[in-house]
Length: 335
Image (cartoon, rainbow, N blue to C red; front, side, top):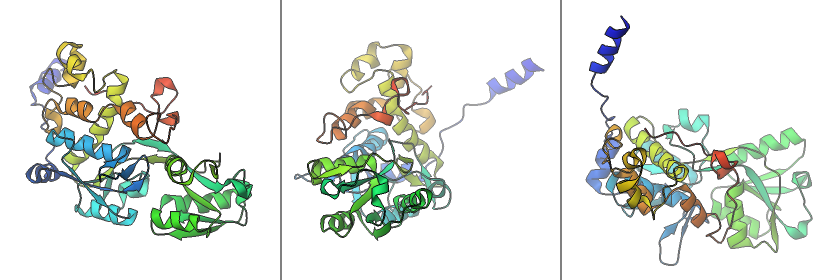
């Protein structure tokens, strides 16, 4: 009986790649449309030349490289968090990457599908050094600016109840409105995810006059979303994100990928398209990972130039380090 079952299993055809209307539309259009925030240092920030830089922008570029073979074939669609979520769910954009927290509600009830984590973060606070506020207890009786309708607004309320301190939340519709209100002194603290806060302090506020408090009041796994109901496109986005960390874990960089594709181990050659097989399950060309890594980089390269030592922010990897180096990044084997 066991031999019969084994024979039947082996006789079954290999599963074909999941059909994806989004993939078909992207190929016909010749570009990936990606909802982002274009004013968040380290995540997505338009430079003087109009080019958008940041880890979210590079996530979109990685998907474009995987699908179209060209990381430059992406069109960024700026908007508020609410607009981006709605546009993604409705299929008006192909994906969203804008420092958005992945939650059960967003993944199950809003017509969205989470597609991997790009930054592990937590919510914190920035205050003026002159305020004398040293930790979250010092916020008692103070006004805190927070983005309206965000997970940050909910977490702030939860933290106030949990700690028994009374804070007045000032919800604002956009990050720009948030920064303006804080700059004008309408609130004594600004609450958002810690990594974006570090970027704002380093590039906009300045560490001499502003400080990020040590308290972390929530867990904020940030990553891209796609429209729910298109399993094939969801898999492409998820495995593209995973490919960035898999490449780092295997020592593949933008500089050495070409050599490893030709003379690396069979595992590396297959991953990079030197041997066939890695593209078929997703309906992509076998060189899709190679295109991602050579055009965008591995996760370490993406992180360091946008958030780490190669950026004005200079943020340590912390939780966003590989698992064997004390972090939370644990890439799923791509076999």
